[in-house]
Image (cartoon, rainbow over all chains, first blue to last red; front, side, top):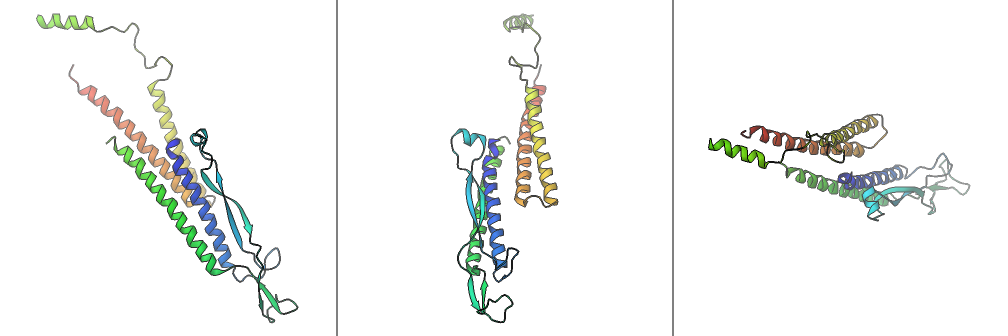
Length: 140
Length: 99
């Protein structure tokens, strides 16, 4: 239904931004995690966004880059933060502990950006909803 | 007397349909079927919103997907109601007309 394609596009935006907020939450809560299932400290994760083709009508009009999706969650390969803590159980032979390459401030900024983008999508959705409702008012 | 002759003239002037009128139009799509399809579609969206709600309850989907399904169902229902109102008001208009 063409009436809803704009709504659906914004829904993909909501999903993608929520995923990004999830990843940022995961990073934030693991700022000091030194043990993971794979071994070693936690590595910062990041999302990669990708456009998706959306809707028959738009495809026919040859407009191919519409919705958005999280195509991958990748690991940040920057080196770990090494701190001298000889008493720590995960310290290496030199007394250094590798802490995750996560900066809490950066993650908070990321989180806020995701929240703002989410809000922008909600705003667009409510505008489209208002447009549809206004059109329906024509019949009253 | 004058009135009756005028009426007869008018009746001759109106072309009489050769066959009994049917609801089916020439290409086989009747208004009733179109309306039925539209109502089915609206119903499908309502069912979809219910499914989304169930999925949300069992933790399978996002809140915004549920809201979006609800919105779609609501909007399509409103469209259906508008169409229905139009049909009913047209019907009432015809019923009110003096014969």
